[in-house]
Image 1 (cartoon, rainbow, N blue to C red):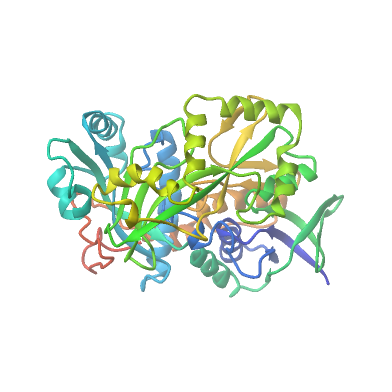
Image 2: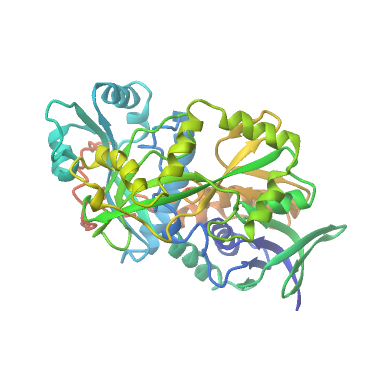
Amino acid sequence: MSENTDLLIVGGGISGASLLYTVAKFTDVDDVTLIEKEREIAAVNSHRTNNSQTLHFGDIETNYTLEKAEEVKEGAELLAGYLEGTDPDREMHSKRSKMVLGVGDGEVDKLEQRYREEGFGDLFPKLREIGRDEIEELEPKVVEGRDSETELKALQTPDGYVVDYGAVAQSFVDAARTEEGVSVHLGTEVTNVDEGDEGFTVETDDGEFAAGAVVVTAGSHSLQFAKEMGYGEDMSLLPVAGSFFLADDLLNGKVYTLQMKKLPFAAVHGDADVHDDGVTRFGPTAKLVPALERGEISTVSDFADVFGLNVSSFLSYANILSDRILFPYVMRNLVYDVPELGKRAFLPHVQKVVPTVEADDIQRAKGYGGVRPQIVDTETKELDMGEAKIEGDGILFNITPSPGASTALKTAMTDVETVLEFFDGEYAFDEAAFRDATIENFPRVDDNEEATSSGSEVDGSSTDDDPIAAEASD
């Protein structure tokens, strides 16, 4: 098989699917092709069991600065608006109360400062401070069994979107396929990308593709492709495998704990599963693994490719892992995998959210969790938090750790502009139509309306006449 295409996208997770959707529906690019090595869309990190199912706005993620939250907020609203407009039956998502919980004077003070002085209350109109009584009303198990003398406060919002990112990715692909000139190849592995004078030759195990431009959205493998083509030489990856513990129905919505700004991983939180609110997840754990995909031994050699096996990479790892905060954290997370001992070691984190939980109430979630590629700058020898883009002449590589799924449509919107530059203005992007189909559907607080919605929609129901209760996750 040999095919010609204007734009070729490598990777069919949420990022690649978002770009395919945006190009197909809102540009006049004649021909766009997506290639995915798995036999179904979003089979790796975007699969619902391999991520926290959270749509991150930056409102309760306490390791975000205000500037970071502003960036993430728009991306989350784009995806939430898409869900509002296309998923009225909630087959891909649900919406529940969401809060970050402060336990004790020190954490309560931090939440108050964040909300009142750092500007988060202004940035998120639906976010509000609630005390013990309202916390108990929304999440009885969070207060039950807790010392009545312990000070409690939460920042709560009704915008607790719980998302099946795999289903969303599939919906993007389905929508794109309704347009002419769209081709999707599943179960097709890219083996090599060559750059020529008039574009790119993409070799696969099912033949060659000739493309005018290429975007690689293959998670951790994006850097592997980049390095094979001579890009990204000053970068490496720190692959972090996340997992969860499961319990019976304990929470109505999402309850986060405060995060440490120095750690790129989410603090432990509890939340009901997107498709089964009778199951509560607690996590994530974060274990370093020498592989690009969890449980795939073949990707160990792929990790060696992106690591580089050079002095700069080894020194970068040594510098990062010698940190007095990060190193103990890494060691603790190794313990969580040990049978019986692991869940007892993890139990105090669960009890911070639900005090009455015992070790027998939780179990390790088998088959859950993916690998998040934390980016390492081998020049500074430090972790480079967030997403990374490597741009060449007609080719773009995206590496998207959390909150990459939450901001997938925003990333796609940015990438479309880059792609159109590759074609020297031959094509155009209808951004107004794109926004009409996405962010314009996101429910907002009216100027004259106080953001006092209690998020009572904890069971996933909504009312048609309440725009705040109307429903819209790295």
